[in-house]
Length: 541
Ligand code: HEM
Image (cartoon, rainbow, N blue to C red):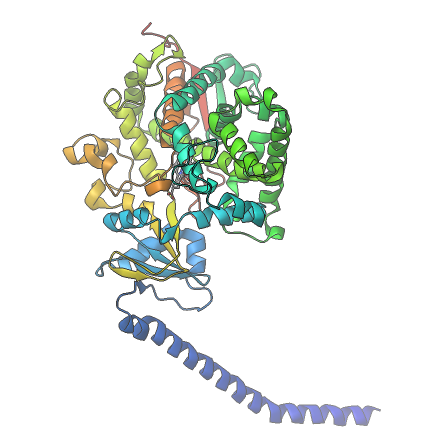
């Protein structure tokens, strides 16, 4: 056996000696071929094609065909967009970026962004909403029903243009949320809730932040605390106590979900996002139970929009499950941004005590004793210019969203042809970091840029100011958002002194994850604040 084995081995070695050079040659040939094909692809895509199609936006070159800029987009989309803008600094008009085989036309010029917001015929926001509906479990029949035109004489919310419920819903949000009687109802509800809940005894005693035994001061993790406070506030204003009774953990589930909401936006495969799916499904099940409670036990506590949406959808035959999923989307529109804005605002104010003092003094007249009484005073920029500037500057630095539209037919924007099937993106942050518009020291929080000059005072009306998107889908909740955040901060400062514990670094923003407005705080960057009963509280009354 042994001699045979030896000869076999010798044969094998011989074969390998003969085959190896052949393998080597094949591999080398393959490499050269791949390199050649790659060079032709790159030359075609980034040199020849742009020359043949000068009317289309120039594309930022990339190395790997299927990936494009996917990796950079995923890790720091704003960094990628900033680099791309520098790359195209000498060319005018939108440019293109490809990530994971999807092409985005990026619009960074304020006037051209107005073209995007205006053109609802060729640029669709609804596609984004429908994709979310699908991702979150709405069935195709429901989506079709909600996006089919309705008669212009239907009962319920007036529909003179015969719009679909999906589009009409935007008008209904405006009816609820723009200044007027319907918004005043929500503002009063919010004021009374803040007055009740921002109470030292409750802070000390109520889990999850209780500090048993504290009689003078309490320490709270700021991001966790403001998140909990604002989500419960938003939930109360829209659903009263009823949803909390159905699921006392609803707000906590929401915060867990909201911190990984990017997995929903990126449509992660199910097995990679149980941390998002478990709380999401729990919340949808709770909303379904909510809508199964007899109407006379819940509707008088709910905001007009919740009852009106229910009526409209039931009239179209939408079942409880699909109704719950649609309303779930509204829940996160209400709650995802205000909680983070209040965190960033307090963070900046504590690091800039002169502004904190100015905020406190300016809002004094809205209080009687420790109670917030006047719901319009703090909102009025003529009476509270410092508050207004603080609000704008906080949004400018913490706003990280982009408006995205699907191109539904070929269209010209900014003098460039945008092809059907691709997406147009207006990254708000690039507009907000334009030194030509917002002045120097652009990376720093300086509310005075909104106050000190004539041009600064006009900034809120500038086409470059887009923290809430634009056009028909511009955030309808922007007035209520300002009210929630500034009423909370004013009441907090009225009743308490608040200080950072120790000397924590400025929290880092979680730049790698897409958000629907305001950026989250990077994990590990929450910090403790000490909240102390204020000795001078109620001084003016
Ligand atoms: C600082 C807080 C907030 C920010 C930065 C913010 C930002 C945004 C943005 C960027 C959009 C998308 C607009 C587009 O692409 O055209 C949006 C939509 C929306 N937001 Fe807000 N939002 C905030 C707070 C709120 C609040 C508190 C509510 C409700 C009470 C709300 C309700 C909505 C609704 C309903 C939409 C969808 C618009 C529509 O289809 O009509 N938002 N928001």
